Amino acid sequence: MKRPFLLLIALFAVPLLVAQQPQAAAPAPLSTPDWHDTFGDALVAAKGTSKKVLIDIYAPWCPWCRRLQEEVYASETIQAYLREHFEVVRLNGEITDDAHSYMEYTLSSSELAQGLGATGYPTTVFLGPDGKYLTRLPGFTGAEDFIYVLRYIASDAYQSKSFDEFLGEVKRPSGGR
Image (cartoon, rainbow, N blue to C red):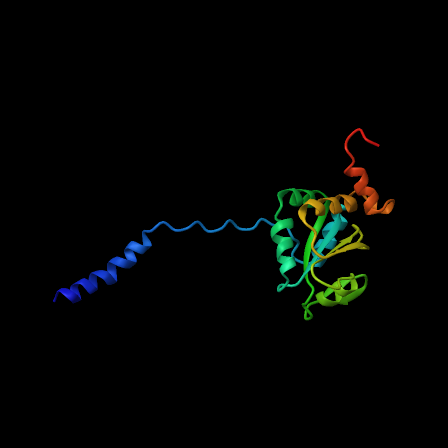
């Protein structure tokens, strides 16, 4: 008679004790830029705000793409700069059954990514406020360097100098020539 009683207590008491154990805190959600829902939304917003467009072309399986999200786009410094100077959108370069209108063409995400010069993942593409192609940055770039790329594009320095010239100017110690 004692064994069934002990078994009954164990069946009810153990789940109650487990439920009362302190739970490990869930990891904080990853902070990300305010990505536009669609490529078209980003283009419309850019026309209204006169900001340039940053397109993050990625693939879900790509570890470098995840690293870009976790280490670069999660940076508060990067997010603040993006909010001020860019309309941002992500584009899965492997989707073939959707449609985007761009420069009088209707293209799938895959076709659009290829048309914008993405030959691998991740690729960051920059467009002017009018939607015209400016340049692209293939591969992963860490946050420390990525901010310089953003500043180079946002300041229009790309129109008159190479990136190396720009870096030489912005990284020069103050007071030096």
